[in-house]
Amino acid sequence: MSEKIFGDYDQAGLDAQYDNRAKVPAFPDYLVRFRSESAAARDQYTGRSRLDVPVGAGPTERVDIFPAAGPGPSPVLVFIHGGYWLMLDKEDFSFVAKGFVPHGITTVVINYALIPSVRMAEVVRQCRQATAWVLAGAAGFGGDPERVAVAGHSAGGHLTAMVAATDWERFTAPLVTMPVATRPIGGVSLSGLHDLVPISRCYLQQSLQLTELEVERYSPVRLPPPAGGSWLALVGEKEGPEYHRQSTELAERWSAAGAADVRARIVPGHDHFSIMMALANPDDPITLEMVRQVRSGP
Image 1 (cartoon, rainbow, N blue to C red):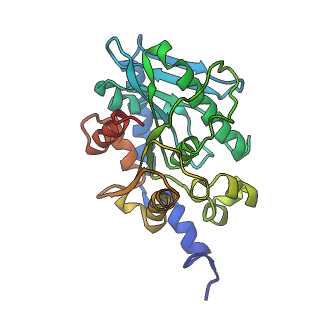
Image 2 (image 1 turned 45 degrees about the vertical axis):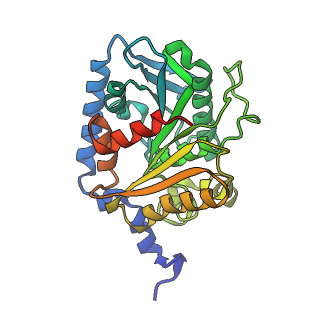
Image 3 (image 1 turned 30 degrees about the vertical axis):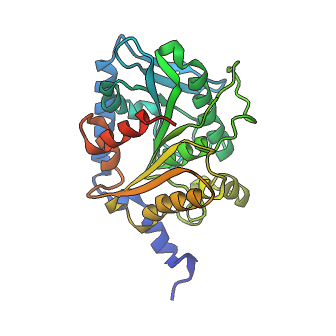
């Protein structure tokens, strides 16, 4: 009988839970669609968007800004892409703007350095830095710094939760010369990875090389919840038990620790990539649910 390495899973079983390419054979087609829809979004917003804006000292610390139409100030959505901290780029996710800009929400898609070129601490720091930059400078691109929300998918959902858990009074951000947050930040984690223990025990560990200390420090389920803010964790029905647990456990632990508004919901009919692709459509129910979340404020 195979040895159990996490919960009721042996090595093969745990690997299968997190192998999204095997679970969704259409992954290559989704990636083509991500990139084609993103190219279309950049073309659509040519003349209004600001691309590759530096927000930190590192070469990957860049953001793409897609301002909402109108005089503003508008709500702002900061979006953090996924890719298991190992792959993909903000340019693969410009299509998110197609879902939110039509609703009057300025959309900022951020980039960050990938493992193994940096450690997890630096990935998290860069996402916090980019969010701090948006909070400090939102008014400069028509955004409302009092209505900034963060969202991300998969590894980006993990990073979204890490941004949520930031102690902003202690965080120091280069390039930011004003207080970076005067109130809690709310948002949405899509298919987020909030517990790094199983990640450190499945096939991904060969590439990530997470230490026990990194697992402890950078697992949102092990951290104090945000002091406020409204948080929503969405996960697709077809993503499997471990992905479901990743979202429901975050909501349970943060709620038990005193968070006022943290909810998890399993979205019927969706897999790991279809739930992300939905954001290209401003009329998709997932997009509309997220629009309500962003507009609801902290």
